Length: 195
Picture 1 (cartoon, rainbow, N blue to C red):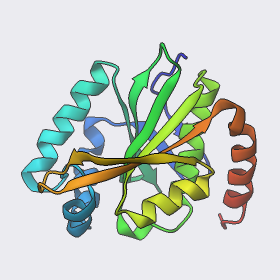
Picture 2: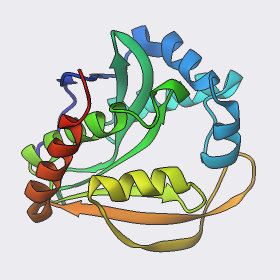
Picture 3: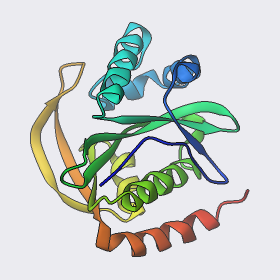
């Protein structure tokens, strides 16, 4: 696998490698739903937590461990979705740390962004793309299944969130051989959205 960060774009979203110019718009998008960070995420992107996590994302990107993406709608950064645990040797990557401003949820944004990220990963030689979701996050679990991923199992007491809650993590994946059928269903779904 030779996965590299690059700009990805379709008619609904533009994904750009996360850069300093996205910082304040992403901060504002993250602040739009503080309860979500408290209840469902391992980390917080609120208040002073935002700057610490931003710095960590940038350092991990420089090290080639992650490729964070700003998700732009109409030229404005309204979220992020990232390649995590990039394993070039084993041809595997995770898509995660996804967050969207509440106004963007339940619309064309997530399937459009995931279509771009999945296509780029598989076109770069990925054999496996995985997703890890908090077991209590029913919305994200449903969204990943709707993409066409297969649920592989649940790791019990897998992570401790920033609030101290011990979470179970649901693992999903899409394999390279499954991608053409997943892609076709995803394209048909995206085609139903008005431009």
